[in-house]
Image (tube, rainbow, N blue to C red):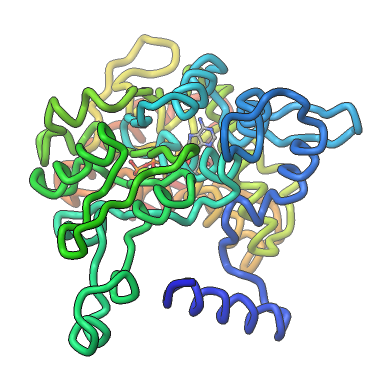
Amino acid sequence: MTVSETTATATATAAAAVGVQALRPHAEDAFAHELKALAAADDRPRPARWKLSPWAVATYLLGGALPDGTVITPKYVGPRRLVEVAVTTLATDRALLLLGVPGTAKTWVSEHLAAAVSGDSTLLVQGTAGTPEEAIRYGWNYARLLAHGPSRDALVPSPLMRAMSEGMTARIEELTRIPADVQDSLITVLSEKTLPVPELGQEVQAVRGFNVIATANDRDRGVNELSSALRRRFNTVVLPLPATPDAEVDIVSRRVDQIGRSLDLPAAPDGMSEIRRVVTVFRELRDGVTTDGRTRLKSPSGTLSTAEAISVVTNGLALAAHFGDGVLRPGDVAAGILGAVVRDPAADRVVWQEYLETVVRERDGWKDFYRACREASA
Ligand SMILES: Nc1ncnc2c1ncn2[C@@H]1O[C@H](COP(=O)(O)OP(=O)(O)OP(=O)(O)O)[C@@H](O)[C@H]1O
Ligand SMILES: [Mg+2]
Protein backbone atom coordinates (compact mmCIF):
# COMPACT_ATOMS: atom_id res chain seq x y z
CA MET A 1 0.00 0.00 0.00
CA THR A 2 1.32 3.47 -0.84
CA VAL A 3 1.45 6.40 1.55
CA SER A 4 -1.50 8.11 -0.10
CA GLU A 5 -3.55 4.91 0.03
CA THR A 6 -2.76 4.49 3.71
CA THR A 7 -3.82 8.08 4.39
CA ALA A 8 -7.00 7.69 2.35
CA THR A 9 -7.91 4.49 4.17
CA ALA A 10 -7.20 6.12 7.52
CA THR A 11 -9.39 9.09 6.63
CA ALA A 12 -12.21 6.83 5.44
CA THR A 13 -11.99 4.74 8.61
CA ALA A 14 -12.01 7.84 10.79
CA ALA A 15 -15.02 9.18 8.90
CA ALA A 16 -16.89 5.89 9.27
CA ALA A 17 -16.09 5.78 12.99
CA VAL A 18 -17.78 9.10 13.71
CA GLY A 19 -20.63 8.39 11.27
CA VAL A 20 -19.99 11.25 8.88
CA GLN A 21 -20.60 11.05 5.16
CA ALA A 22 -18.38 12.23 2.36
CA LEU A 23 -19.72 15.44 0.88
CA ARG A 24 -19.51 13.90 -2.53
CA PRO A 25 -19.09 10.13 -2.52
CA HIS A 26 -17.33 8.53 -5.49
CA ALA A 27 -19.62 7.01 -8.11
CA GLU A 28 -18.69 3.46 -7.06
CA ASP A 29 -19.81 4.23 -3.49
CA ALA A 30 -22.86 6.34 -4.31
CA PHE A 31 -24.22 3.68 -6.66
CA ALA A 32 -22.74 0.62 -4.97
CA HIS A 33 -26.12 -1.13 -4.72
CA GLU A 34 -26.77 -0.71 -8.46
CA LEU A 35 -23.32 -1.99 -9.36
CA LYS A 36 -23.76 -4.98 -7.10
CA ALA A 37 -27.16 -5.85 -8.55
CA LEU A 38 -25.80 -5.48 -12.07
CA ALA A 39 -22.85 -7.75 -11.32
CA ALA A 40 -25.22 -10.38 -9.93
CA ALA A 41 -27.54 -10.24 -12.93
CA ASP A 42 -24.77 -10.04 -15.50
CA ASP A 43 -24.05 -13.36 -17.20
CA ARG A 44 -22.34 -11.99 -20.29
CA PRO A 45 -18.62 -12.33 -20.87
CA ARG A 46 -16.44 -9.76 -19.10
CA PRO A 47 -13.14 -8.53 -20.51
CA ALA A 48 -10.12 -9.28 -18.31
CA ARG A 49 -10.29 -7.54 -14.92
CA TRP A 50 -13.63 -5.89 -15.75
CA LYS A 51 -16.18 -5.88 -12.94
CA LEU A 52 -19.05 -6.00 -15.45
CA SER A 53 -19.65 -6.95 -19.07
CA PRO A 54 -19.77 -4.13 -21.64
CA TRP A 55 -23.54 -4.60 -21.81
CA ALA A 56 -23.89 -4.13 -18.05
CA VAL A 57 -21.61 -1.08 -18.09
CA ALA A 58 -23.80 0.52 -20.78
CA THR A 59 -26.92 -0.35 -18.76
CA TYR A 60 -25.35 1.24 -15.68
CA LEU A 61 -24.80 4.46 -17.60
CA LEU A 62 -28.07 4.58 -19.52
CA GLY A 63 -30.36 3.05 -16.92
CA GLY A 64 -32.75 0.10 -17.07
CA ALA A 65 -34.54 -2.50 -14.99
CA LEU A 66 -33.05 -5.84 -13.91
CA PRO A 67 -34.93 -9.15 -13.70
CA ASP A 68 -34.78 -8.98 -9.88
CA GLY A 69 -36.64 -5.67 -9.96
CA THR A 70 -33.64 -3.41 -9.26
CA VAL A 71 -33.99 -0.12 -11.07
CA ILE A 72 -30.79 1.22 -12.56
CA THR A 73 -31.04 5.00 -12.71
CA PRO A 74 -29.81 6.66 -15.89
CA LYS A 75 -26.56 8.50 -15.25
CA TYR A 76 -26.11 9.80 -18.76
CA VAL A 77 -29.02 11.03 -20.84
CA GLY A 78 -28.04 10.99 -24.48
CA PRO A 79 -27.61 8.78 -27.54
CA ARG A 80 -27.28 5.09 -26.63
CA ARG A 81 -24.91 4.42 -29.50
CA LEU A 82 -22.44 6.91 -28.16
CA VAL A 83 -22.23 5.14 -24.81
CA GLU A 84 -21.89 1.78 -26.55
CA VAL A 85 -18.99 3.08 -28.63
CA ALA A 86 -17.31 4.51 -25.52
CA VAL A 87 -17.66 1.27 -23.55
CA THR A 88 -16.49 -0.86 -26.47
CA THR A 89 -13.43 1.31 -26.93
CA LEU A 90 -12.39 0.58 -23.36
CA ALA A 91 -12.43 -3.13 -24.13
CA THR A 92 -9.96 -2.62 -26.99
CA ASP A 93 -6.35 -1.52 -26.87
CA ARG A 94 -7.23 2.05 -27.76
CA ALA A 95 -7.82 4.71 -25.15
CA LEU A 96 -10.99 6.79 -24.97
CA LEU A 97 -11.14 10.56 -25.41
CA LEU A 98 -14.37 12.28 -24.40
CA LEU A 99 -14.60 15.59 -26.17
CA GLY A 100 -17.25 18.30 -25.99
CA VAL A 101 -18.16 21.83 -25.03
CA PRO A 102 -18.23 22.65 -21.30
CA GLY A 103 -20.93 21.03 -19.20
CA THR A 104 -21.71 18.12 -21.52
CA ALA A 105 -20.97 15.54 -18.80
CA LYS A 106 -17.49 14.50 -19.95
CA THR A 107 -16.13 14.29 -16.41
CA TRP A 108 -19.34 12.71 -15.16
CA VAL A 109 -19.34 9.99 -17.83
CA SER A 110 -15.64 9.32 -17.31
CA GLU A 111 -16.14 8.82 -13.57
CA HIS A 112 -19.10 6.48 -14.04
CA LEU A 113 -17.35 4.47 -16.75
CA ALA A 114 -14.32 3.94 -14.51
CA ALA A 115 -16.57 3.01 -11.59
CA ALA A 116 -18.50 0.46 -13.63
CA VAL A 117 -15.54 -1.05 -15.47
CA SER A 118 -12.94 -1.15 -12.70
CA GLY A 119 -14.96 -0.47 -9.56
CA ASP A 120 -12.67 2.49 -8.86
CA SER A 121 -12.93 5.98 -10.34
CA THR A 122 -10.17 7.53 -8.25
CA LEU A 123 -7.10 6.80 -10.36
CA LEU A 124 -7.24 10.34 -11.65
CA VAL A 125 -4.75 12.81 -13.08
CA GLN A 126 -6.07 16.37 -13.20
CA GLY A 127 -4.68 18.17 -16.21
CA THR A 128 -3.60 21.78 -15.76
CA ALA A 129 -0.99 24.04 -17.31
CA GLY A 130 1.23 23.05 -14.38
CA THR A 131 0.79 19.26 -14.53
CA PRO A 132 4.32 17.85 -14.19
CA GLU A 133 5.60 14.71 -15.82
CA GLU A 134 5.65 13.00 -12.41
CA ALA A 135 1.86 13.21 -12.31
CA ILE A 136 1.75 10.97 -15.36
CA ARG A 137 4.85 8.83 -14.77
CA TYR A 138 6.12 8.58 -11.20
CA GLY A 139 7.86 10.62 -8.55
CA TRP A 140 10.19 9.89 -5.68
CA ASN A 141 9.87 9.91 -1.94
CA TYR A 142 12.93 12.07 -1.36
CA ALA A 143 13.56 10.98 2.22
CA ARG A 144 13.82 7.36 1.09
CA LEU A 145 15.67 8.28 -2.06
CA LEU A 146 18.35 10.12 -0.07
CA ALA A 147 18.56 7.48 2.63
CA HIS A 148 18.64 4.36 0.44
CA GLY A 149 19.12 5.51 -3.13
CA PRO A 150 16.69 4.76 -5.95
CA SER A 151 14.65 1.66 -5.23
CA ARG A 152 11.16 0.42 -5.88
CA ASP A 153 10.33 1.49 -2.31
CA ALA A 154 11.33 5.08 -2.92
CA LEU A 155 9.25 5.33 -6.07
CA VAL A 156 5.90 7.08 -5.82
CA PRO A 157 3.71 5.76 -8.62
CA SER A 158 1.31 8.05 -10.46
CA PRO A 159 -2.35 7.04 -10.70
CA LEU A 160 -1.59 6.03 -14.27
CA MET A 161 1.23 3.74 -13.16
CA ARG A 162 -1.00 2.13 -10.56
CA ALA A 163 -3.73 1.59 -13.12
CA MET A 164 -1.17 -0.09 -15.40
CA SER A 165 0.14 -2.47 -12.79
CA GLU A 166 -3.30 -3.32 -11.43
CA GLY A 167 -5.16 -3.55 -14.75
CA MET A 168 -7.53 -0.71 -13.99
CA THR A 169 -9.03 2.32 -15.71
CA ALA A 170 -7.05 5.54 -15.31
CA ARG A 171 -8.66 8.92 -15.89
CA ILE A 172 -7.00 12.03 -17.24
CA GLU A 173 -9.05 15.19 -16.90
CA GLU A 174 -8.60 18.13 -19.26
CA LEU A 175 -5.90 16.48 -21.34
CA THR A 176 -5.42 19.50 -23.62
CA ARG A 177 -4.52 21.76 -20.71
CA ILE A 178 -1.42 19.68 -20.06
CA PRO A 179 1.75 21.09 -21.68
CA ALA A 180 2.61 19.34 -24.93
CA ASP A 181 5.89 17.79 -23.74
CA VAL A 182 4.17 16.31 -20.68
CA GLN A 183 1.35 14.98 -22.85
CA ASP A 184 3.95 13.21 -24.93
CA SER A 185 4.99 11.04 -22.01
CA LEU A 186 1.66 9.29 -22.56
CA ILE A 187 2.57 8.07 -26.00
CA THR A 188 4.77 5.17 -24.86
CA VAL A 189 2.20 4.21 -22.26
CA LEU A 190 -0.59 4.10 -24.79
CA SER A 191 1.26 2.49 -27.67
CA GLU A 192 3.77 0.21 -25.95
CA LYS A 193 1.69 -0.28 -22.78
CA THR A 194 4.80 0.13 -20.72
CA LEU A 195 6.34 2.77 -18.51
CA PRO A 196 10.13 2.65 -18.34
CA VAL A 197 11.83 3.52 -15.05
CA PRO A 198 15.39 4.17 -16.26
CA GLU A 199 16.65 4.99 -12.74
CA LEU A 200 16.00 1.39 -11.73
CA GLY A 201 16.68 -0.18 -15.11
CA GLN A 202 13.15 -1.53 -14.97
CA GLU A 203 9.79 -1.01 -16.56
CA VAL A 204 6.21 -1.29 -15.44
CA GLN A 205 4.18 -3.24 -17.94
CA ALA A 206 0.47 -2.70 -18.15
CA VAL A 207 -1.55 -5.77 -17.32
CA ARG A 208 -4.78 -6.64 -19.06
CA GLY A 209 -7.70 -4.51 -18.01
CA PHE A 210 -5.68 -1.30 -18.13
CA ASN A 211 -7.03 1.56 -20.20
CA VAL A 212 -7.30 5.33 -20.13
CA ILE A 213 -10.26 7.70 -20.32
CA ALA A 214 -9.28 11.26 -21.07
CA THR A 215 -11.54 14.29 -21.26
CA ALA A 216 -10.94 17.49 -23.17
CA ASN A 217 -12.89 20.63 -23.62
CA ASP A 218 -13.72 21.86 -27.11
CA ARG A 219 -13.29 25.44 -26.05
CA ASP A 220 -9.74 24.84 -24.87
CA ARG A 221 -8.70 23.73 -28.30
CA GLY A 222 -5.64 25.68 -29.23
CA VAL A 223 -4.43 26.01 -25.64
CA ASN A 224 -2.39 22.88 -26.13
CA GLU A 225 -3.32 20.95 -29.21
CA LEU A 226 -3.23 17.20 -28.89
CA SER A 227 -0.28 16.04 -30.91
CA SER A 228 -1.34 13.92 -33.83
CA ALA A 229 0.79 11.06 -32.48
CA LEU A 230 -1.23 11.10 -29.27
CA ARG A 231 -4.57 11.66 -30.97
CA ARG A 232 -4.06 8.54 -33.05
CA ARG A 233 -3.96 6.50 -29.87
CA PHE A 234 -7.41 7.62 -28.81
CA ASN A 235 -10.89 6.85 -30.05
CA THR A 236 -12.73 10.13 -29.76
CA VAL A 237 -16.34 10.28 -28.64
CA VAL A 238 -17.94 13.71 -28.85
CA LEU A 239 -20.57 14.36 -26.19
CA PRO A 240 -23.27 16.64 -27.64
CA LEU A 241 -25.40 19.28 -25.98
CA PRO A 242 -28.88 17.94 -25.20
CA ALA A 243 -30.76 17.71 -28.50
CA THR A 244 -34.15 18.99 -27.36
CA PRO A 245 -35.48 21.25 -24.58
CA ASP A 246 -37.33 18.26 -23.12
CA ALA A 247 -34.13 16.24 -22.92
CA GLU A 248 -32.36 19.10 -21.18
CA VAL A 249 -35.23 19.64 -18.72
CA ASP A 250 -35.09 15.92 -17.99
CA ILE A 251 -31.34 16.03 -17.28
CA VAL A 252 -31.60 19.13 -15.10
CA SER A 253 -34.51 17.84 -13.04
CA ARG A 254 -32.90 14.44 -12.47
CA ARG A 255 -29.59 15.89 -11.37
CA VAL A 256 -31.16 18.60 -9.24
CA ASP A 257 -33.21 15.95 -7.52
CA GLN A 258 -30.10 13.85 -6.79
CA ILE A 259 -28.03 16.81 -5.63
CA GLY A 260 -30.91 18.17 -3.55
CA ARG A 261 -31.24 14.85 -1.75
CA SER A 262 -27.54 14.75 -0.99
CA LEU A 263 -27.81 18.27 0.46
CA ASP A 264 -30.96 17.38 2.42
CA LEU A 265 -33.02 19.96 0.53
CA PRO A 266 -36.75 19.27 0.53
CA ALA A 267 -38.10 18.13 -2.84
CA ALA A 268 -39.78 21.04 -4.58
CA PRO A 269 -43.32 20.02 -5.49
CA ASP A 270 -43.74 22.47 -8.34
CA GLY A 271 -40.21 23.06 -9.47
CA MET A 272 -40.80 21.90 -13.03
CA SER A 273 -42.13 25.15 -14.44
CA GLU A 274 -39.09 27.10 -13.20
CA ILE A 275 -36.72 24.42 -14.43
CA ARG A 276 -38.35 24.64 -17.84
CA ARG A 277 -37.92 28.41 -17.84
CA VAL A 278 -34.25 28.26 -16.85
CA VAL A 279 -33.59 25.71 -19.59
CA THR A 280 -35.52 27.77 -22.16
CA VAL A 281 -33.59 30.96 -21.32
CA PHE A 282 -30.25 29.15 -21.44
CA ARG A 283 -31.00 27.39 -24.72
CA GLU A 284 -32.31 30.51 -26.45
CA LEU A 285 -29.34 32.62 -25.44
CA ARG A 286 -26.91 29.82 -26.29
CA ASP A 287 -28.48 29.21 -29.71
CA GLY A 288 -28.89 32.92 -30.46
CA VAL A 289 -32.52 32.47 -31.49
CA THR A 290 -35.88 32.06 -29.71
CA THR A 291 -37.51 28.62 -29.52
CA ASP A 292 -40.10 29.57 -32.14
CA GLY A 293 -37.26 30.54 -34.47
CA ARG A 294 -38.69 34.05 -35.00
CA THR A 295 -36.31 36.33 -33.12
CA ARG A 296 -32.57 36.36 -33.45
CA LEU A 297 -30.69 37.04 -30.22
CA LYS A 298 -27.19 38.03 -29.26
CA SER A 299 -25.38 35.36 -27.23
CA PRO A 300 -23.60 36.31 -24.02
CA SER A 301 -19.96 35.42 -23.41
CA GLY A 302 -20.63 32.67 -20.84
CA THR A 303 -21.21 29.05 -21.84
CA LEU A 304 -24.71 28.61 -20.33
CA SER A 305 -24.24 24.87 -20.20
CA THR A 306 -26.55 22.23 -18.80
CA ALA A 307 -24.19 22.06 -15.83
CA GLU A 308 -24.82 25.75 -15.12
CA ALA A 309 -28.57 25.30 -15.44
CA ILE A 310 -28.27 22.54 -12.83
CA SER A 311 -26.43 24.80 -10.44
CA VAL A 312 -28.84 27.72 -10.95
CA VAL A 313 -31.80 25.48 -10.08
CA THR A 314 -30.00 23.86 -7.13
CA ASN A 315 -29.19 27.29 -5.70
CA GLY A 316 -32.78 28.34 -6.30
CA LEU A 317 -34.03 25.31 -4.37
CA ALA A 318 -31.71 26.12 -1.48
CA LEU A 319 -33.05 29.69 -1.43
CA ALA A 320 -36.62 28.42 -1.51
CA ALA A 321 -35.92 25.93 1.27
CA HIS A 322 -34.09 28.27 3.62
CA PHE A 323 -35.69 31.64 2.94
CA GLY A 324 -38.94 30.88 1.12
CA ASP A 325 -41.83 28.49 1.57
CA GLY A 326 -40.04 25.54 -0.01
CA VAL A 327 -41.66 26.07 -3.41
CA LEU A 328 -39.30 27.04 -6.22
CA ARG A 329 -40.43 30.45 -7.48
CA PRO A 330 -39.16 32.82 -10.18
CA GLY A 331 -37.42 35.00 -7.58
CA ASP A 332 -35.34 32.02 -6.47
CA VAL A 333 -33.80 31.40 -9.88
CA ALA A 334 -33.64 34.97 -11.23
CA ALA A 335 -30.43 35.98 -9.45
CA GLY A 336 -28.75 32.74 -10.48
CA ILE A 337 -29.71 33.22 -14.12
CA LEU A 338 -28.43 36.76 -14.04
CA GLY A 339 -25.13 35.58 -12.55
CA ALA A 340 -24.73 32.89 -15.23
CA VAL A 341 -25.63 35.16 -18.14
CA VAL A 342 -23.84 38.36 -17.14
CA ARG A 343 -20.20 37.30 -16.93
CA ASP A 344 -18.86 40.41 -18.58
CA PRO A 345 -20.57 43.29 -16.75
CA ALA A 346 -20.65 45.61 -19.75
CA ALA A 347 -21.36 43.58 -22.89
CA ASP A 348 -23.41 40.78 -21.34
CA ARG A 349 -25.66 43.16 -19.43
CA VAL A 350 -26.76 44.75 -22.69
CA VAL A 351 -27.48 41.32 -24.19
CA TRP A 352 -29.48 40.33 -21.10
CA GLN A 353 -31.51 43.57 -20.95
CA GLU A 354 -32.40 43.25 -24.61
CA TYR A 355 -33.49 39.64 -24.15
CA LEU A 356 -35.49 40.54 -21.07
CA GLU A 357 -37.37 43.39 -22.71
CA THR A 358 -37.96 41.89 -26.14
CA VAL A 359 -38.53 38.21 -25.34
CA VAL A 360 -39.27 37.56 -21.66
CA ARG A 361 -41.59 40.51 -21.24
CA GLU A 362 -43.76 39.58 -24.21
CA ARG A 363 -44.08 35.89 -23.48
CA ASP A 364 -47.46 34.56 -22.31
CA GLY A 365 -47.48 33.39 -18.71
CA TRP A 366 -44.01 34.78 -18.00
CA LYS A 367 -45.06 38.03 -16.24
CA ASP A 368 -44.00 36.84 -12.78
CA PHE A 369 -40.70 35.65 -14.16
CA TYR A 370 -40.14 38.93 -15.99
CA ARG A 371 -40.77 40.88 -12.80
CA ALA A 372 -38.40 38.70 -10.78
CA CYS A 373 -35.66 39.12 -13.40
CA ARG A 374 -36.16 42.89 -13.48
CA GLU A 375 -35.83 43.02 -9.71
CA ALA A 376 -32.70 40.88 -9.75
CA SER A 377 -31.14 43.07 -12.48
CA ALA A 378 -31.89 46.35 -10.75
N1 LIG B 1 -26.44 14.47 -21.04
C1 LIG B 1 -26.31 14.49 -19.71
N2 LIG B 1 -26.76 13.47 -18.97
C2 LIG B 1 -26.63 13.48 -17.62
N3 LIG B 1 -26.07 14.48 -16.91
C3 LIG B 1 -25.62 15.54 -17.60
C4 LIG B 1 -25.71 15.60 -19.03
N4 LIG B 1 -25.18 16.78 -19.44
C5 LIG B 1 -24.75 17.41 -18.32
N5 LIG B 1 -25.00 16.67 -17.22
C6 LIG B 1 -24.69 17.04 -15.84
O1 LIG B 1 -23.90 18.20 -15.88
C7 LIG B 1 -23.00 18.22 -14.80
C8 LIG B 1 -21.64 18.70 -15.25
O2 LIG B 1 -21.05 17.79 -16.06
P1 LIG B 1 -19.46 17.66 -16.16
O3 LIG B 1 -18.78 18.39 -15.08
O4 LIG B 1 -19.18 16.22 -16.34
O5 LIG B 1 -19.21 18.44 -17.52
P2 LIG B 1 -17.89 18.53 -18.37
O6 LIG B 1 -18.29 18.19 -19.76
O7 LIG B 1 -16.81 17.74 -17.74
O8 LIG B 1 -17.61 20.08 -18.30
P3 LIG B 1 -16.21 20.87 -18.33
O9 LIG B 1 -15.80 20.91 -19.78
O10 LIG B 1 -16.57 22.20 -17.81
O11 LIG B 1 -15.24 20.10 -17.48
C9 LIG B 1 -23.01 16.85 -14.17
O12 LIG B 1 -23.65 16.97 -12.94
C10 LIG B 1 -23.84 16.01 -15.13
O13 LIG B 1 -24.65 15.15 -14.41
MG1 LIG C 1 -14.99 18.26 -16.89
